[in-house]
Image (cartoon, rainbow, N blue to C red):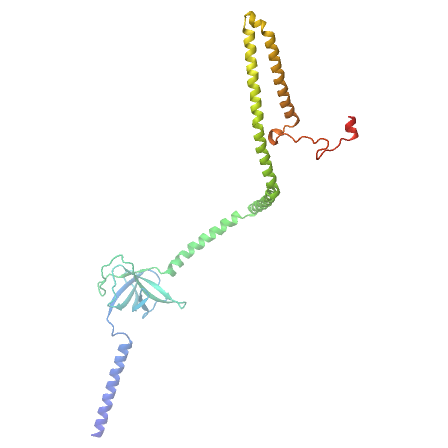
Length: 311
């Protein structure tokens, strides 16, 4: 009886141990999760992707790769069967692409949904497949040769542009530009010197002299206008006397001519003074009449030399 009881206990222990092992495998294997199967069709290479690889939805792990095989009807297609969490809301607008983890080259299926078609995707048999979009690596690998060709063409054209003759022209242009810059610096220095404080003071003094000269020129112009009006009146009187046929007109011509001669003499003297002033110092029109020479006993008087007195 004792041998039978020991055998019974050993059998129960073995049975419980096997059941616990099966439960552990089932638990750690993830088969306890409710999943749904989908099919991904890819025309690109799936280098780095393997069975039991991860399936992620916007970066979150949601399933794994169950199988990778060629399409028997079209060998250009690669069929990737995946199982994902049944609670994942996949739609007909969901797309897939390969993502790579770090620098190890291990790939995973990355599911994305742009919202182009919100109709739910049921999954399982008869469900439309999910299209695989080119990954970033594939886009770079496809664009790489074209970029290299363009870079080669650019280098060839640059070498044609920068041949010996064009380099000589470019060197000449740079030399001219350097000379132009030096001239510009000299002009800037000269302009700075011209706009110094002393020159600005001289310019201000010149402007004040010009303003003063213009103020003094106004009376001179008024006097010249008066002289011209006097000449016009004299000419009118002379025309009247000559055109008068009466004896009284001819009899009174002599005193009137004497009066006219006196007015003409005075007018001539005034004009002579104006012309002499303009001839001796024309700058007086802008800067005014020159100061009078100091006489004996006045400040600044200089006695003439013997040669000047003899002359």
